[in-house]
Length: 377
Image (cartoon, rainbow, N blue to C red):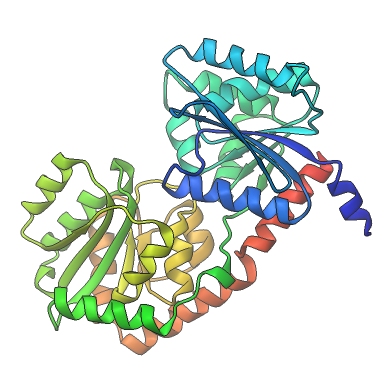
């Protein structure tokens, strides 16, 4: 047995999160992917999932999963969790504690790490940072967690710089999201079904732009669609919106007089029925981390029209289909360049991005980078 696998047996990680299956969305997906990848490397992961469901505990391969119900009295919840963790009947040694996603992990993990005398590793997605740093209610908790962390892991290079400017001597590591290429493949039937759906739902001479995910205000959906109207290209474009939308926002979007197709939020693999129908995927976020939809769409050789922000530019690099976030003129330019672009040229550029992802943004590389964090902290 190699030295690294001997060391892996010593890693017994307590993982606190508000985002895990059966939750839906990118945060839960990332949490599942990272913990699964670490288990594949021989690491024991014990997940505490703060949820609205009743308490339950399940043994998993290389660890366990505990659904820990929280109520409005957060202080009571975290005291009860401490009692649970230190109960002699189920107490065990942990090598590290992780705070991943949400306020509760960031409240609890710094304190538990001191009481258990183990290192704290904080994993930040885009939303954790962007929201918490400007929240009068969350900022103190957020910054205290970062100050107490042995390592802070982020999914974009820009977040490294921002945190280093805020916190002296912070140990920040850039570990981008990964994608399991072997599990993210189009079958012939996927492509055929997508094309049949497109033929039935999209005008023959229109380009279809897909927008997928939890479409919160920061995602820039309303901005992007308004630019399409102002750019005078609405007759050339249809928009497929797949995801959670507030009813009021959906009503407002319908007033834009665009060719809009709405589908409810779908699980990741269900999206394979719709990705191939799209001529491009749009990610017009005002701010973000590294959206999973970015890697998913790009790995299928679908062109990306997106804001030139954080993790998006880390993956895409230079592209005339990127625009400054919230800039009407620049977004207009990117859209018109997409409309006018040669289809073969778009496919060539999309293929280059897919190749870059397969080499540098796959889930095995991601898991090994996290493994190294735990082995060296």
